[in-house]
Image 1: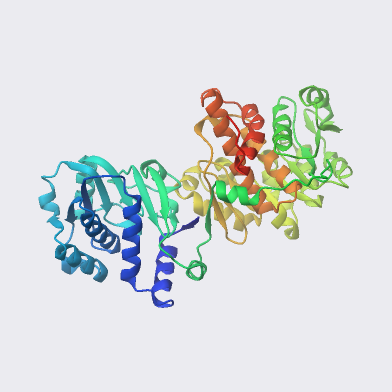
Image 2: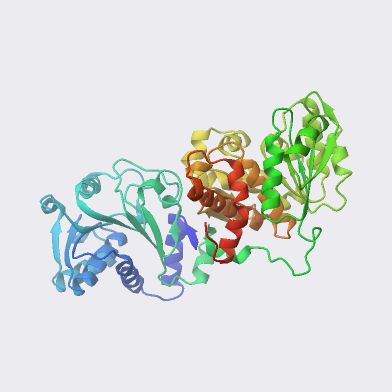
Length: 504
């Protein structure tokens, strides 16, 4: 499923109309028919219609519902002469078909209906609703009935998910043509309700011409990108990984990263740790090989990076960073490793400050996995700025670092250096606990090792990791969910994504 900004969706619509010869009223009629398909069953319907094409969709939808013998009242916010040409046409058609149309002033006497529809602004809104729109939103929110938003709730920024005051709260948002970022990220996702997409036949040519680069990472996408294990597979053909991780007091990080890698299908995992914690790691982990490296204090010595590189002649992918305490010696070790590692690399946690050590020609096979605080440090901004526009932040991370960038949060957004964006659909609040990021880093490294290119491995890893968290939450609840629970649910998540009938 495509995800578009307001400008991109407008460009795609215009291309379809101007370059491909599809009349705008045909698109509007198609949109209204798809909206009607999505409407919950209702006898009494009220539709708030603005003066733009979103309002035109509302007028058209009202006419179609009335033709299905629904009791429809259209609330016009503006006089006909202040409407867009297509909205004027659909308004006139609604009147011609005998649909009840009242002014906003008259609507104050209405109490509600089975279904109340927001067709006030759509993607054309900028800033907080004012004047008649603000009055209409307030009245809309006071009404009883199921609330449905056309394309995006009024009062939500289409591109960032910022919610203005007032904003129309929806139970269901029906996006037209493409999904909109504003209902998937930020505060917007909280008031959009259930989000569904309805296709109105915008051709691929128009999508490409408009520069629409967002994709929803859902089960269909994940299933299409899962690795296929050959019948004659062996441990060296399923991903030979190295995990460079850990310090005294942070033995959980390499343990969880290794579990994430193994439970997501890695064939062979070597965990490189400071020698002072190698005995602890050997007790905590059974399947991986343990590689003790030189230590200084309670972390890696400066030559540990060089030592790790000497053991990587057959390594397919490596992870560096989880649980590494930052000291001058460990910094030197991480810089050496990141600069000289020839395989694909996942950089996480303590190693993120050294991403710039990665040679430019190796950036496209490198994945970084910052949470929003780490992202703010990379971009030299505040966490508040990241949260205000996470889509832009993810794009800036990929552009600045040249790496595939996984901006963790809800939802997690993955951006690639060539401009592609992926918004994840899995995960739950129970995963907000220490160690889940280590598991995720291990999963992504595992998928790269299994032969998936870095960008797709990052997106698929985020999806499977979130789904595993959802499975674990279903099994034991969100409260008390631990990172180990997420790791152990990964095989079930993969099986479910494959379409297998697995009980949870």
